Each structure stands twice: as C-alpha cells, then as structure tokens.
Amino acid sequence: MKFAVLQFPGSNCDQDCVHVLRSVFGYPTRLLWHKEYSVGDADAVIIPGGFSYGDYLRTGSIARFSPVMGAVKEFADNGGLVLGICNGFQILCEAGLLPGALIRNRSLQFRCEHVYLQVASHNSPFTGQIPEDKNLRIPIAHGEGNYFCDDETLQSLEDNDQVLFQYVDAEGDLTDHANPNGSRANIAGICNEKRNVGGMMPHPERASEAILGGDDGRLIFQSLITALKNQPTLA
Image (tube, rainbow, N blue to C red; front, side):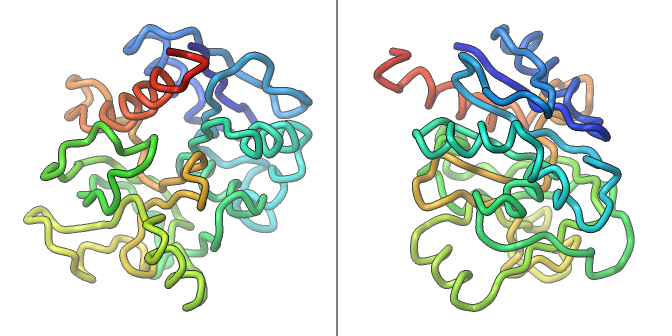
C-alpha cells in the first residue's frame, strides 16, 4: 500500500502528512511535486494544507491548474481514494472534484484552535473506523474555512449522505457557537457522490500522536487505510 502527498509552492503540511503515514502507520509515502503528470503507483492521494501559491486570487484557485491535478482527477475518476485537508479541501472544490466553495471566515479572522467534530456519516472510506458515539477533537488553522453552497447543493449533500463532519461543542451539540467559521450546516467535511473523494478543514495529521495533545486524527487515517485494505486489488 503506497501513498502520495501532493506538494505545491506554499504547502506547509505536506511533511506532517508524510510523517504520519510513513512513521506513525509505517506505509511507503512519497511527496509528489505539483508539476508531475501522474500519481504513479499510489493507492491513495493526500492533498495537504498550506497556502498553495500564496492563496493568491482565491484559496486553491491557482493550484487547481497545476499539472498534477489533472492526474488526480483521472485517478479519482477511476475510483482512487483522495483526501484533501484544509487547503487541499479548498483545491478539490476549486477543481470541481467536490461541490461548493470555501470562503472567508465569518469573523474575518484566522482561526487556529481545537474544535470538536461530529461524524455525520460513517459510510465513507474516511470515517468507517470511527466509533459510532465518538466525537473527534482536532485542530483547525484557516482564514477561509467557511463552507458555502447553494440550497440545492446542500439538500443534495444531505440527501446523499455526503456530509462527513460537522462542528459541535464539547458536549456534542450542533450549535452556531460551535461553528468556528460560519460554514453552512456546521459542515467541516464532505465527500463526493462516489464517496472516494473527501475534503475536510480540520487537520487530522496534527492530532495523530498523543504527544501533540490528542490522537483522534489517527481514526481518519486508519479509516482510509482499512478501506484500501478492503479493496479487491489490495486484499
């Protein structure tokens, strides 16, 4: 089982993702430069957080045109598993691989703090190993994490069980106060209709070792790894 972590000019969480997958979980993981035209023999692709191309124009709006994103789209169209984290989520939305957009936080402030997440759907490769009654405590670090979509798209996401994570408070209640950025329906992460492309604003790679103050993020990577193991070609 092999992982590829994309690297754009301005990526700053790429090494964190490599560390978790390679050193914490023990799987071969390589950085994939944005000018590459193929994902090679990767079994899953991670698009990490950061500030690709300095977040000029809009977050992710330049990175979507990098050659590697054409390869990622082809990989996803063929059923490959793709997870975008923070800036990676923004890039996937800009590239049309996920619906909606990430816009400026409601407060117009950069928010860097731990948040609580409710798993809205366990029916995905990114959440399948998270216990049913488990709320996750994972950090965020973003200025444009406000998930926005029109009413029709939101209804479609809810009808198709595509909402993966929602912001909740420490007691697990879905409240406006628990929403750190103003996202519609407290959305913190979604997947596509085929369920093989996921995006989330919180950073699971920053919560995958107890020494960092919590390891709830490991459950997301473990879900992805388990899903890959259960694929016929990797069984």
